[in-house]
Length: 158
Image (cartoon, rainbow, N blue to C red):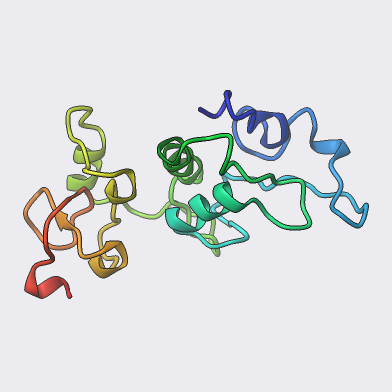
């Protein structure tokens, strides 16, 4: 998806903002506009996958970042949003250090057979309020585990 959407042209092959078109990019006022280093964990529109999805969908006004609403399906935009988030390896934007991913989350994320009902329910980092994802339940059976499935929220997740 990264290659098909041509993200690499601006953001570079590894997402560091060093793509071949990066030096010539300008904002709407004609000033140089450096593409974001997506590995840094700092995103203009917010750090959550929903924020990245919104940016993929609407673009960033005044910048060379386009909207992909018409050129990529919703499913592809979710996949690309998760990929972009993964590039930062869940780094703390203040320290640059990787955030811990619980062993149960890592196991679930590495299981190719495990599926979420919809792309927006694919991963809820441990410790994040389940309500931020519509009260998703964890497959591992403990509230706060990351990989979610459809279903009504449990009483302790509201």
